[in-house]
Every structure is written in C-alpha cells, then in structure tokens.
Amino acid sequence: MWLTELRQKIEDKTAKLAVIGLGYVGLPVACEFARTGFSVLGVEVQAERAEKINAGICPIEGKEPGLQELVFKTVQNGRLRATREYQDLRLQDVILICVETPVDENNIPQYRALRNALANLGKVLKTGALVIIESTIAPGTMSRVALPILEESSNLRVNRDFFLGACPERVMPGKLLANLRNMSRVVGGFSPETAEVMAALYRHVVEADLDPTDCITAELVKTVENAYRDVQIAFANEVALICESAGGDVWKVRELVNKSPGRSMHMPGAGVGGHCIPKDPWLLAYGVEENGRRPQIIPAARAVNNGMPFHMADLVEQALLEAGLALQDARVLVLGYSYLEDSDDTRNSPSEILVDHLRKKGAEVLIHDPYVPGYQGAVLQKARGCDVAILMVKHQAYRSLDLEELKAVMRTPILVDGRAVFTRQQASRAGFVFRGVGVGKTPGS
Image (cartoon, rainbow, N blue to C red):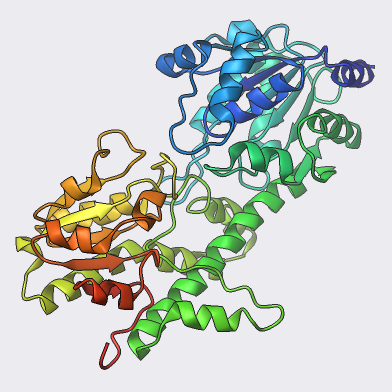
C-alpha cells in the first residue's frame, strides 16, 4: 500500500523530497529534482554553506556548467531550500543521503557522517518514506550498517513501515549536472518493488539507463567501477616509469597501443586524487579477508598511484641537479592544487602530498591555482624568481601558458610536467630544462 501511494506521488511530483548533504553530489541532485518540479529540502550541517544556498549562491567553485544558474533559479522559485535541522524532515516522502564515506589511514571505512545522518533521520522518519543512500559504500554496508541504524532509531521495520535502497552517485567535478543527467545508474532496493519505485523517481532526472537490482549488486558495481579505473591508471603509471627508464615516451607509446582493437590504455600522471578513486578500491576490498580472501591487485595499484607525487619530487631533484642546484636551495612553484582540472576540489590532492614532501626536504614552495581560494592570482607573478615550475593539474590557465613569458620571470628555467601539458620539444625551444612523467631523457634530447 505504502509503495503504491508513494509511486503515484512520485509520478505526479507531489512527493516531498529531501537531500542530506549538499556537497558535490547532493547539491546538483537537489537542484535537478527541484528543476523537474519537486519540492526539495536540503540538510546541510555547515551553516555558511546553507546560508549561501538559501541566498541562491552556489558554494562550489570551478567550472560547473549550469549549476550556479540552477541553484539561483530553484531557490528563487521556492523549489529548493536548505536547512540545518533534521526536525524539518518529518513530512518528507523520499530522503536521499549524500554524505562523505572516507577511509582512515588503515583503509578502514569511516562512516561517522553516514551513521549520524541515519540516526538523526530515523528519529523523524515518516511511516511509508523511502530512504536512498547515494554515498559510495563498501559491499554489505546497507545490510550491516544502514538498515540496523534506521530500524533502531525509528522503531520502524523495512519493507513494512519504510523502504530502503542504494543508488550510488556517478558524478565528477566539472561535469556534475551532465553526469547526473546522462550517466546510467544502478538502482538497488531491499525489495524488487522498492527498486522499481526508485527507478520511477530517478527517471525524472536521469536520461540514461536505470537498472533495478538488489542493494549488494548496487554497492559492488560502484566500488568495482572505481577500482577498475584505479588499477588501469596504475598500469599506465607503471608503463610511464618504464618508459622513463628505457628512454621512451609514454604518450607516443600509449597512442600506438590504443590503435590496436580492444586496447584502451589510461592516462598516466602526477597522482590520483579526489574523494572516490583513492578510497573506493579499499571499500571494495574491505572485509574480504574475513572470508579468506586477500586482495593483491588493488593494494599494488594503490601503492603505484600513491607513489606518483613522490616520483614528481624525484623528477624535480633530477632537473635541479642538471641545472647545478640542490633542492634545499630551490624556490619551487606548484601549478595546480585541486585534484582535477578546472575544479576547486582539493580532496586527496596529489599536490598536497608533493608540497608537504618538498617542504620537508627543505625547498621553498609556492602554490598557484586559479580556482582554490588562497592560491589564486597572476601565474607569472607567482613564478617570479622561482627555479622550478611543476605542472600538477591541467587547468586551462596552464594549457595556455606562454613558456617564453614564464621563462623570462623565473630565476632558473626548469619545467617539470606531470600532466603532459607541454612536450620536451616545446620546453627545450623555450630554453627550459625539462622533465615529464613518462618521458625518458633520450640521447640528444
């Protein structure tokens, strides 16, 4: 009965929606449902963020096509409102949870935000409501963590008094709205009927495939997807290191490898960051040792990718040595502090690791990023008097850099490129000592 009524309310858009967590995932989700005609209430514990949203201001910096306009429009027309109070959720029919799910230094999932959200929601959960977790979680978390907390805090029972499912997000900064609309979604419910109602909800905002299934499959699909990417990037990074040793060029190798049918070698680079890829493989692997399984590829891939910022530091030292300088006497400019091009997202940024490492080794380190507060400004002004420019992020501002102008303001012309923004030939023509990920120092180069 409850699901039949809820589905009808979803179909005619009279269902009251809530989104817990208005960050990179929750805010575009809330805006999209509001855009299609739903009344959406967002719960955001950060007061400043909630105030900005209620003023029609998007708190996410960087290039996010359409998001600023959509935040303003949906707030102005009354479809979207932010609150800090869980008490305001008493009348909501559908609640989507979009909170962070990090891992600790031992790669153990840390679900403090998720547990708090579930416990606070349970206290006010309406009978007949549908709860959907969009956060990425380890396989089995829905059964072991989410369900017990909700049932205990609400004194209600799943599939009788309320309904529960998982629909892991599939967005990335810079493409939040586009990904939300155009990427397929796996919709996992604690019953097949719940999954179908969830699919009916997401059809209002998702234009791609919606695949109803069970919760464990939904959890597995998302973590497998990002673990796959991590492993493939690690392979590309290892090939890059081999190319450096052999005197080859990984970018030419990659181009030619990918001409072979069925080959799709990923991009190597200065490191892997963001909220998802560095931790989702650990979520996938979490708990399997209890069943006698010991993952091997995932830890190895993580080790390779975690090592790339340190390899960047090695390239810096090599280039300085060629120029007759020591790292502890050098002034270094790190170009890019976010983890992703044209974004302000600094979560698990490889640049943060590099900066910390270089400073511990005695270098003077400056940072520039056009999107990260505190590091903005004129690139050439920041570069004045520096010995090394290290390209860590492929921001558009760096892709359009004039190397001759950059050289003119630097004390020592050294360029270390971790994202293949420039070739060795371009750097050499401009008079730079050059090092690049995957680019060997071949004779005569």
